[in-house]
Image (tube, rainbow, N blue to C red; front, side, top):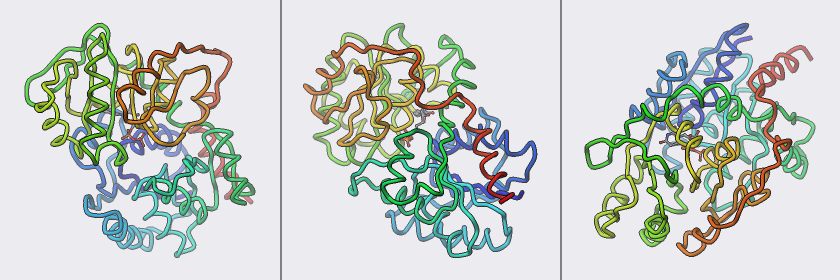
Amino acid sequence: MKILTVVGARPQFIKAAVVSHVLRQKHTEILVHTGQHFDYNMSQQFFDELDIPAPDYNLGISGGSHGEMTGKMLMEIEKVLVKEQPDWLLLYGDTNSTLAGALAAAKLHIPICHVEAGTRTHSRTNPEEINRICTDHVSSLLLASTQSGMEDMAKEGLAGRGQLVGDPMYDAFIQYSGKKNIADIELQLLNGGTARVPEKYCYLTCHREENTNRDEDLQEIFKAMESLDMPVIYPVHPRNHARALRLAEKMLLTNIILAQPVGYLESACLVKHAQCVVTDSGGLQREAFFAGKKCVTILPFVVWAETMVGNRNNLASPKAEDILAKLQLPQTIDEDYQPFGDGKASEKIVAAMENAERK
Ligand code: UDP
């Protein structure tokens, strides 16, 4: 089979890494990078560390409004699809790169395989929700990471095209989270200089539009982090650098280590050794769960319901009091509960395409 994969953002590089290694054992993969994430530590570092083959096409499209970015990607991906004529278009997750790929392939009658299908926040104000819904409805093969994804697909009449394969993020965490030694990590500070990882710390990531478009919300999150009895490591997403630095200065922060984004090997290692995780990331909340670390997710909606058991992951509003209260709740872990599969999602994803091709 000839499979054309479109990626563009950090979490997609991680998923594509594990799947691509399996895929290329038997099939031809053409890799298209839209350019949505482009800084070295948001893109190339992942290709280097996770041994992802260099993209065959780099479209160099980033920034602008959602419509502008998606529209430009749609035009360019269409050209590549017409030229390459793949048997499948393989898409991951819920970014603008995912949506653009889906729209381009659907109009060309190229079958689409969507990994992480069925994931729903049930909030139409969440920009990624629109990408998920549209992509699922035009895809031929809908591969869900969890049972709740299957259930949400069924509610939208998509069950016939759905299969439960498990979560390739879990595969990646198993394969890569032990590859870095915590003592070797050198954090690059946002305002210059470096820092070592403290013995005890809370790991914070926060970059969603919902939390970082207004000073008030990020300020409340910082207020909560300042009052913790351990330092907080916060690798700041590029879209949020200026705001984070300005607020850090204004609030005279002393407890939060503002760092440049780290690579995946470092991030997974930081999750493993953290006391707790505070995040608005879909990936980080699952990784905290994989590592058995207490997590507070600052979002107005549930993304990964499976993690929200035994106080392992609780939602908080961007209010200091709420974040701190949720961090206090003691978690209980049932070791037998493994809702994200068996670490072999990548094999199942490739097998699902092979089986569909045979029909
Ligand atoms: N991550 C990383 N470096 C960082 C912050 C996060 O490698 O500085 C990883 C993290 O471990 C997770 C993924 O990036 O695997 C999450 O990506 P992101 O938060 O950008 O997207 P989301 O998961 O919310 O779609």
